[in-house]
Image 1 (cartoon, rainbow, N blue to C red):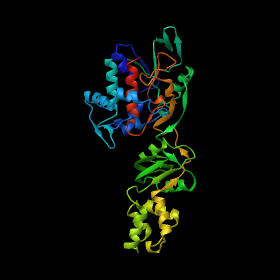
Image 2: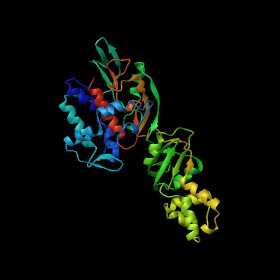
Image 3: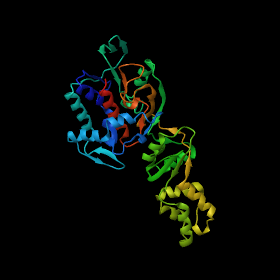
Length: 373
């Protein structure tokens, strides 16, 4: 829609084809129905790609401030929730209506519930089904949330025209576990804490949520984009507290206090109990050797675990991988080896962090392509 609007403004005749019944369903369901439409802190560092420099041009050509100006022009009220995340005050449908209104002003024709059976080259450009055209833009997204129509269509078109596709996997997705760790998570379902979660050299400090399948919450969703099968993640369940130093202070000043009671003053009671039981450590702090206190502190500040997998595309917010950016112009989003063929948004190997970054990539890459199609 963003690309169609910009192309239409330039006087181009634009046909937008969508196989869905409803327009922009991913916008509609995002941000709890209020659409986290961008992030004040959008920068290239907020994106993952085989080529981390690729996104710079588009993000510079159309910034978060440009999109904020657009929604303010339409009178849409918004607020910052946290960490630069911007949401509509009322409803995500306001963003959809804004885009549809801009499409109408740009004389964009929209065909809903229309499947694309073929994309072929002609002497004058292309033919999509029976529609002749001089250029084609693929903005079909990735594989995440198949229930609203996600498919591999965009990747198939890329391969048809000889473009390389980076292997895809779910991103911003809950992690799952097996055996005893799964039992612990089930017993703690619904409990949340502020935590720092790390994988390799990458860390995120946000909420963590225990679920009946494993772990979720913003910090887990963020780290899932960096996690690979067979890798450990390290969780600090009390990032503001040096638990060992805390235990030693209590041992000195409140030696008769029960270890679980002491830990419950830092963590939720159920979680403190679970950790103590898992490490088989109980009794008065005074009676516990420092070695046991170190073990328990490590279980809080450096909880090392290995996920068995993710919940997959069904609940993933984005798809990692996609059209190889080496195949595209970062300035125009046009395929280097196929004049008139463009790829934008999530179908490209550019994936943002949680918090409005992926929508900003959609606006920016769509805007850019719209200047050249």
